[in-house]
Structure formats: structure tokens, C-alpha cells
Length: 137
Image (cartoon, rainbow, N blue to C red):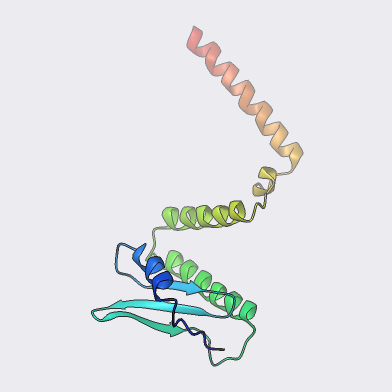
């Protein structure tokens, strides 16, 4: 399904003008995703996966998976610095979680069992106490 943006020029223009640096942007609605690329004569648009006849949610999922795969490959190849690459992705995913009011239990980030975490907190507390004692001498 092709989307007709006739009569919507101002709304589209407002969205595009929010981007100060002329670089490609991805726009979407409930029916399609469009890659918009700046050119000297305005914006060139290209509907993504328009010939595959997929439902809109499948199009979004396929594009998302391809973007994630490409990003991870860029981190692993060194094109994106490892620390900043993973950190940026974590912030982006956290932002999505916040947007949809989803929550993740902080304990789920660790592979340690609750008992192991408790033991390490006890160790850390004892080390802090010992270092304070050493510093007081």
C-alpha cells in the first residue's frame, strides 16, 4: 500500500525541519516505513520493503532486525567504538522501555545468583570497613 502525502506537506516539512544536519531519516506511519534522504532539490523518499507485500508489523520487525544486525556488526568490526557502541544501544533501548512504560528488574542484568550478589555485597562492606581501619592508623 502506497501512502499519499498530498495535502500533508506542512506536517512532513515540520518533521523534516527538526533535523538540523542533513542526513537520512526514517519516517513511518501505521502502513509503511520511508527512508528520506536529503538532496540539493529537497528530500528523496524510498518506501522500504514495499514490494514484499508484508503486513506493516512484519515490515517494522524486519527493518528493526536489519538495523540491529548492522549496528552490532559495526561494533564488532570496530567501525563503532565498542564501549560507546554498546552503551549507546543500551541507552536507546532504555529510552524505548521508558516510552512504553516498561520496567526491567535491575537484578536481571546480573548473571550472579541472589546468594552470590549477597555474598559479594558482604565482602565489599567488609573490605570498606578494613580499608577505613587501615586509613585510620
